[in-house]
Length: 494
Length: 98
Image: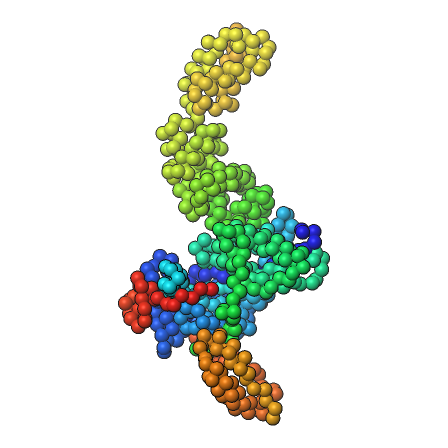
């Protein structure tokens, strides 16, 4: 099937914006931690006489996102009413944007298996989130829904891609990159699990290398990056099967069922939609002056691609490391805080960077994955990681001891010096102590000493091993080697 | 003038979209009433609008927006005061599944 057809996918992403108050009223955006119906007011309840007023910050966030996606910012933003009767809307319509989105066009670059591809962006617009429904189904005669209006009116930004995506891998990469971009911009948490970042997909298949388009379906209810991947994979094979069996794909909305691993038709005559968009009479159009846009452009933070390139140029990191370290803003920030490059001599920056990168991408990522933690939950502060790598580089802790110290820091967030000292993991640098250990080994291993003096150079390895045993692995092998050589040289001269 | 009327099927579709329950008598009455209303508005077709920019809104753009400052919401008893049905501080509504 892979040879015969190719999928054509476009994604719609809804991201809640990180404003403090709602889109059209001053209720705080704290619905996740609130009791039902406690962060609502006459505006989000749609009580008669209430009027919506646009949150300026939300408009700015959408302009910033549009700019970061290379879109063209409209000179006038207009809101429309999108009408549909469903109890998640208090007003009977959602305030959205129709033919004048804040940002039009643009693109987002993704990288799949080393190949760069630009995914076109159709538009970015602003709307409001809806209330949360709970469907209660006690028995056939006792079904009802419970409505919590708290989420209603939270600013929601919709980013629509062109149908440029041609595999589940590309879809996943697009979503990860878009999320990372929104996090860099500070406009959304991008959290998919709690519903702050949601994705619907439009998908169809077509014979490979043809411009024919078969009918598309819309897939909803994908609540994680993994479920987007699985749902698209499933839907592609379903559509191929329909076509192969001589059937036709029906245009419809299908819901992804995570448990069953399939998409299910939500087609129903009862829910025929006719949104009847018309200009929102309560909100006059909002002029977006170029002065405002220019100011926002000037204040855009460094974006993922630019940061990746800087990590490669300035810290001389391999592009693999740079890509992983900049995949999220928090990761990149953590790295740079640990580096604290201002305090490092120029010629030591690259080696320090590689050392911090290795610990972050190695042990740290491994431990975080194993305990299902995010970098924001980390107990090791950037400054502690820095001190830790200093200790490793100076030889104060080494080898397996370093891993042990790191694990303890990961669990407790303790200072690396303290961990190493309290566990007796620092390397022994007490010269008298080491001299004594070396002398003892030489005295008690006559055979090996004679072998070495007799010209068998490898015998020193045995002696080194004995000293390490004597010091319970805490000696620095390089120092012991030097000490042994000196002592043995004296012996052979006597 | 030969003006297309609003058919009964169109009325039924509008009723479905608005969730209105209409009797067959309602449908035929509304079909003719809505057609008449449309006819009334057709008078606007006679206005010469060439050279006039399309108007998306009746109010001129003034760009009035608010700063992102949260303020107090309603106490939950006020919010639910007029609700026909309530359960555990939720609005209770007829089962609607989509």
